[in-house]
Image 1 (cartoon, rainbow over the protein chains, first blue to last red):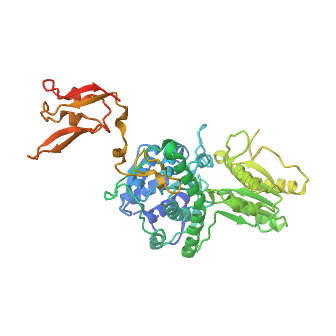
Image 2 (image 1 turned 135 degrees about the vertical axis):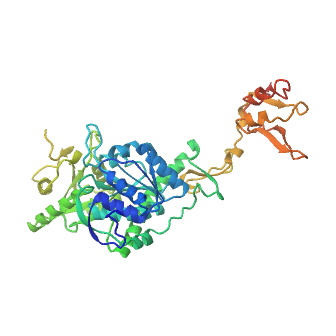
Amino acid sequence: MIKTVYPKGRLVAKTGNEVMAEAMRQIEPDVVAAYPITPATEIVQIFSQFVADGIVKSEYVAVESEHSAMSATIAASAAGARAMTGTSSQGLSLMWEMLYIASGLRLPIVMAEVNRAISAPINIHGDQSDTMGARDAGWIQIYSENSQEAYDNMIQATKIAEKAKLPVLVTTDGFIISHCMEVVETYPDEDVKNFIGEYKPDRYLLDTKRPYTLGSIDLQDYYFEHRWQLAQAMRDAKDIVLEVAKDFENTFGRKYDLYEKFMMDDAEIAVVVIGSTAGTAKVVIKELREKGIKAGLIKIRVFRPFPAETIVKDLANVKAIAVMDRSDSCSGTYAPVYSDVVSALYAAGITGPKAINYVYGLGGREINTEHIAAIYDKLGKIASGAEKAFTGIEYVNVRF
Amino acid sequence: MENNNCKIKLSASELPIGDIVEAGTAQNFITGDWRSERPVWNKDKCIHCLACWISCPDSSVKIAPDEKKITVITGIDYDHCKGCGICAKECPVKIKAITMEEEKK
């Protein structure tokens, strides 16, 4: 019996990986097909132990690669099973072509994803290049600030995926969350099971009474309509995410939104960030607020679908914004989160705030309170007109 | 989606999501219309060995039980036969109940 099983739910000290495995145990999907990869290894390792010990009834498929892991998960989901997998970095990259098939076939797969740098050079540490590379794959992307959020997001993701008929990936920052121990409140098995409910697919391939063909050829006749449906499903998913968050709050008492606003009501300078760095930024903001500096933070939780319409309202009255990206598109212009935020502002006709782009923390490079304080300092100067806003990307803590 | 000849195409809101298509739609696909040679079956020569039926890649050799409930060849489904000639090739040499003839439009 593994020590990480707490059927009645309680406050426990757990790493991000342990708590994601714990969520998977409570969800008890019908099928999990996965291949271990650092730093996500422990998630499926612990889960496979649950299967071996008979703690869960799930079928565990030990595959020979991540491409097979995604393929087997897709097959299980199409057959009518509640199916899950977990991966990171190169593993997600190897799933690439299958990611599009999962979303194109509208299969409600849930993936535990641990953000890690992409080779080359080889690096096993945390940055968001992997999932940002998969941002156009038609998967809902939910990012976690800490282990508690990772646990809560996994539970919500199951419900979101099945309502939206879209695959969902839930991420944690590699090593920063995946391997660091924090106190997490877990919920009783029964409550989690009641919350997610029983999975009843509309149609499934093992239903011999209503046979159908899945994944047939579309060509010019129907492909465009199907892709529109997928794009529309992603737009519609915003309401579903909020609806599930509301249910979650009513059941477990924790409030979630598409993104989190921290001290934004009267903020003059703001940082937009995704993942664990939001926690570091919050510490800086509290210090700045004591000095009377009106600093705020927007932490994007749901990156796909991107909450463009509402995020612009919260940024409209800010004088200067820094968008922090933990990945670089190598696009010759800007990083992905900045591009989304700025295009959302421009589309809404908001040109007041000066928006600048920082890339930080690639390959697990340290990002501490001093770095973030320096960013707010720069924002303050830009807001007051003492300094000009820079164009191009500013790289935090890199040696030139 | 009835078949590929359907004149009115479904819109994005009418189309089943996730590329779901009802089973057995291949029957409605008339795939035999690009045949250059057609197999012609001679009922009188046929010994009903079913070699052509088992070899046909398009299930285009039609079979049915006769009055004694023995499975016999009844003809060729020209809607789906692509004229590959396997049936004629597989027909026993001494019998030659199927011959390939040039397709006339």
